[in-house]
Length: 510
Image 1: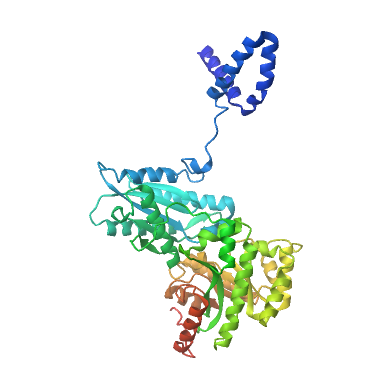
Image 2: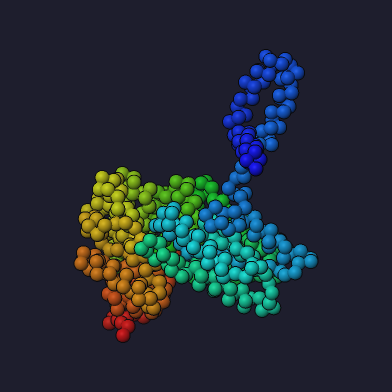
């Protein structure tokens, strides 16, 4: 037995040597050695045998690129190619069952990944993928399409397939939304779902069915967090992934395809408009609206965040000027400033120049920065920019508060005007005591530091009422209004002011 094991060990080591890619580099030296000691015949023999040995060992085989790998390394789920194979089976003439396709995407995944870091987001993805597996029947399949997006092949076993698919979509959303523990933090997620039934597929192929489901998902994302949409003939299927090149993105920015839409912020107690946030939106001339989650990462990857910031700032200040002219005075407009912009030593001067150009008082411009910026050292360029902008009169909002590592002393030291409570703390605040305790603690800290508070992602009247009870200052979210273009915002705001009674107060919960 020992002899057999020893022989196997020798074989293993020989295979390991043959698999080493650098072994091929010795081929010229081996050829010369063969010529010296055996002449042309031995050299010819080596030239034939040596590449064969390398091929057997595997040194001359190329690893599959990541896009062609069949298993996602983070979640262990099959990838897109497996999903397409499974969906294709449903279109075969002898198929036992037709297949429906569902695609689900975690809302604001790019932002969440930035907050949690690589290890944190990988933990979340693994937890979500495990839950999604559990929610399915054995005959169904879940695959990882891209980070934060999952695709499903579902056997169509019932006649009432539309109703059954809607119920399954809601069940998958529930699986995603259950709190995930990450250290001492509880991560709360929401998701959008798009699906396509086999009878609605533009073509009898798995690729067309998946493209239809992804088109429905794009519409769901545009409709807001937690939305579900079914593919219909009126939707244009997006066959294959669209890669936004740098030139395409630059063209979209320069031609006004990418513009800010504005979401109002209101006083929680009275409903009075206290400001708005400028959020980038892309209206493509042929593809229609493109979700921020689809183009913002591409802009960041292309190194165009500063250009995006310039476009949003210019259009936001233009909107404020136009609203003033039309009789709507919005106290302040908030713009998001990326890490790339904050690390530009000339940022504060550029913003001051734009304010002078539009004759806009600096106190009407709010600079939103992520909490993790505050956690950096005082010597950092970003911190110098924050201090310079605050000193000029601009207001500083700390975005996604509660998700980063900012010390309380740092918040007080850097002239933060308001903290924006992340949506993950607001979700289910009306029913979850832990969420209420967390928000209450954050509001108490802000009050002690004499800092205002804005709750993001308020989606229900019950959440709005609970925020009023707990003492939050401002609210922003779909329950108030969705983001909208500047002209639509003007119309909405004027109507809102007319409807709102001067003494309107949101009732507190008993």
